[in-house]
Length: 97
Image 1 (cartoon, rainbow, N blue to C red):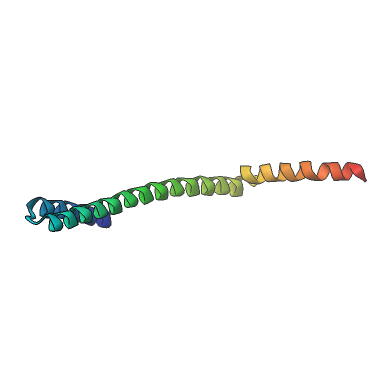
Image 2 (image 1 turned 45 degrees about the vertical axis):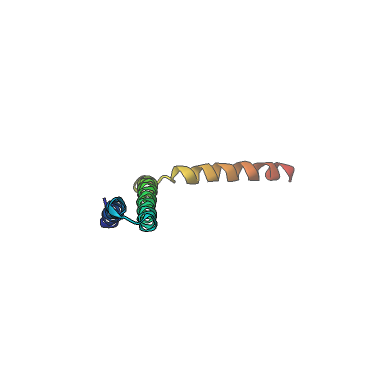
């Protein structure tokens, strides 16, 4: 867990404690809203961390494919698909001539 997420969790818990001990309803409501806002920051951070993890996995897979292509002198799979598609598109025009 990052220090920002840890900080947001601490602040949310603090606001909940203050809300529980607040005597005035208006002050209590403000602390409750602040706690909700802090928890929303925590949720957003969790979602961003998950996206970053997925992105890192995708980048890693792409780099492995690229490295494999460089070491075996074989084009990466995505490039092979594009080359095959290009060949299919250019074949009919060659037959028409």
